[in-house]
Length: 113
Figure 1 (cartoon, rainbow, N blue to C red):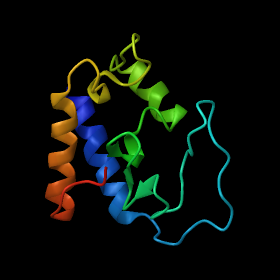
Figure 2: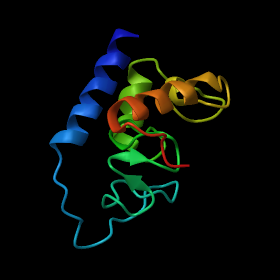
Figure 3: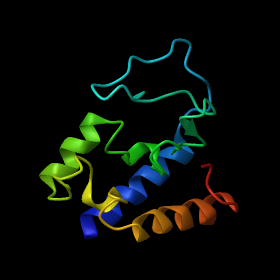
Figure 4: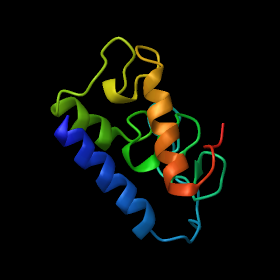
């Protein structure tokens, strides 16, 4: 659990330290058809938030295969739904509320739907 908290904190920190310039060329989608790092404000990634999956883009286990591999190695993986256990809203819908509260704390408003 401590590793996950550190990973989330690092991801949030990267969001604030990242460049706000949009990418010149759209990135190639990953194996799931998701953009790995879409330019900010494109609808998939808004203010560093993965709108499609409801978590910070920097730690989205569905969009980023490197993040997924790190979370699997840390034991944070839901085999049934192929995503980080800590991000599996199917197994535990209250996890979505936790990430929504994190977004509200950072941005002072509800996350995009």
